[in-house]
Image (tube, rainbow, N blue to C red; front, side):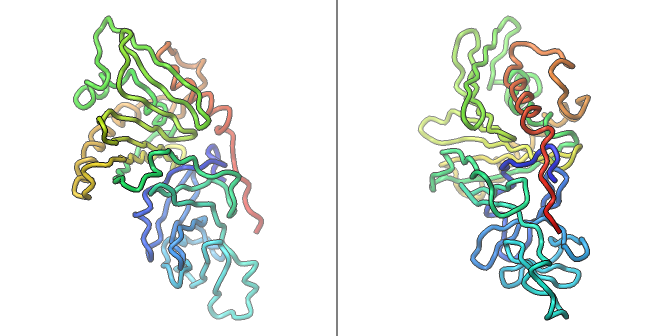
Length: 319
């Protein structure tokens, strides 16, 4: 299960998007997943496959804090246990459960652990800024027709900004033909932090890579907070969802979410037009492409991916 992306925590969306009575279907690294809220309002996650006849549980409904299969009405609690088998009061329900997945709601976000079971060996590493309760979050999701690793490394790539984003982010990294860009990488427990200088002058933007699939951009906003979390969610080998989450302590009305979404859509579209042409679709070994000094952040990502994720998988639960 979750081949190439197993045993890690990933952001999958905003907590407010998971409603009380409506299942939320997802696909992560080739696996169908469904999220729902139990009777206490807690976020729960199951493999989106009924153990009876394999249909999507997400096509069903939430009843009494359980997820009801649309086919034969079997009901499953948040821990996957079977709570009802219609027409069969003598059924051995302890053997008829669905497969649960660890899920957490932290910092206004939904986090999924990519391995079956209720327990995870760790908790999600939530950025400090999300511990505050005076923030507004808005999100926008954009599909890419390419392997997730290409989208991830693009989000860590400084030098492309004045070229791919010449109409939107050109001033974020001022460029002249004779300029020298230096990128400093600092190892952190959660990944790495990058900062830049141009011709020796420090630039005001800091970029974090949070293993395995999130970029955290710290934007200058004076005494205000304005940050961007960009999570690159693998759907399958050739489809990726880029989830952009803006975090701010100003313009908190939901009305402004539209404007942030429109800007994110434009910037993401500029990236997509280029990234989807990458060959091969998955990032290759470093020796198969030509790299230079300013590629250090993307090369570090590639090494982490190949060392810790590329060959990973989670064991299928016993049936």
